Length: 377
Ligand code: IPM
Ligand code: MN
Image (tube, rainbow, N blue to C red; front, side, top):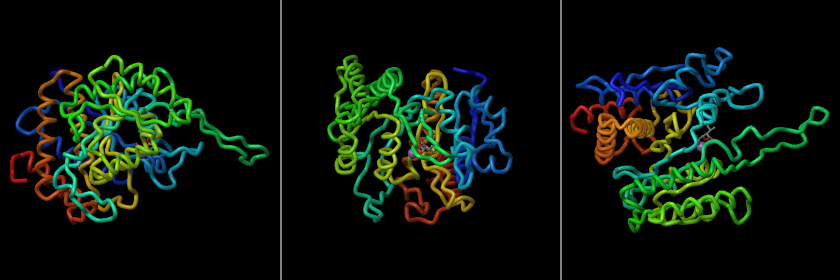
């Protein structure tokens, strides 16, 4: 426990990032009322829009803060036309750069459908599911696979003939993320919604790819340390249909980076859409929390997007800090936030456009902040 409080570095980033981060801070402030806040938050500019303006992705003090902070909250990065000379997105330093630089090896993406939240499978707004059906966590490896710099182009006579991305799967990278997922499956109290079984699903393509065969071998080896966890396997193609058809079966799933990127976007539909999907990028020493939806340039400046993903990211952040520092104050705040989000959602949902409503981003934030203060949700 840190008596002096925890340093939270906030990177609002691009597009709708600053809009959802503003609401996230509103919620943090509401939680801190009535006592000295056990945290201190500082904001730093950066991202693609910042790059277009300044020629730099961020400033040295922001980079230093990412290393010295106890936790990082990221809005989103990416802006049309903001590209680095090598073709990468400007602002990558704040996402992919930090995942790599701070060795944030596990990308932990909860997928839970709260009562009052509608999903839009087949384009209709429906509420046929609940946490009784959708309540899982997908753990995505976050530092290797197709995301390493083992890529490039063969240009002959100035013309690109071949573009190559190499898939890197390492023993160390697989072991630590798989172990993280087993620990999570052990710690989660409820198990799979269908049968309460503490199940860990390994998602791969080991019927074809060598890297996936290695990943699955590692999964089986580590599984021996966790006899109480049910081992489960899914080829990624089959997983996509089972996920939609029978989400009740899934408790915790673990997979490689690129497959995890894809299946977590798909899974977000089951939890009401990207407006509810949060992710924690977790390492041994550092962690960064973010809404998964990205900068959504189309909606930037309109005060329209759903800030709940950021609220869930804040909840994940407080819980991670609380567990890491054995600090009951933060765990209490995380529980309080989770309860409040559940209550607000069950009383009229998020209310934002993605849920068929007309509430603005700031109105959604106001409702949650008011509910935290004990006013009617
Ligand atoms: C995500 C995003 C990132 C990724 C992009 C913005 C680089 O899609 O966090 O899932 O590919 O990991
Ligand atoms: Mn993604």
